[in-house]
Length: 181
Image (cartoon, rainbow, N blue to C red; front, side, top):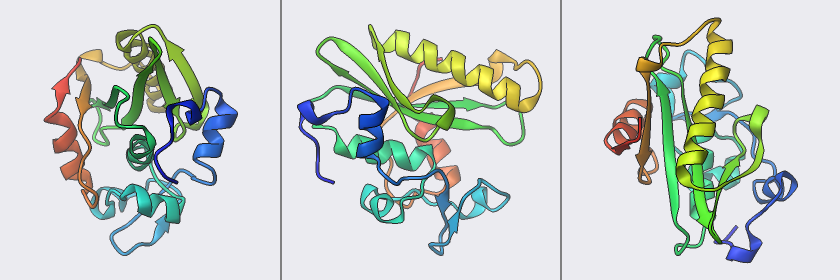
């Protein structure tokens, strides 16, 4: 997969699936073993794959998938990568998304979060981030079995991390970005 021309970027969920064909949710550890679920070893053994590695392994969490998506965008397209995190539990669940602007519209491509897999169009970045945050907080509240303390929720815009970054390094990298909430 090389960088895609602007005209090649998908506008439907089906077209997005073709771009990320065969990529499943999961992770690859330091020893290149594949894991289909985020388990007790994740925080100790995860490492961010380079886009080329993800193309081969076909297995990545949202952090990996967003970096592959970013690598496919033409460099002249304005884009933002966003890190959502909830600090109110020991697990500190997170999600990352790629947003980009084309022809005066903002698009959210979601592949890793199966419930919302697809292409979403917004008027601007703020509207996209507000909608994603709402959906993610609702989802996490459902997963955690109750209301969430929104004071424990944060959103950061971050630049591309280096491949091989571990879990703690990824959190620190994203948190060093621009805080949006």
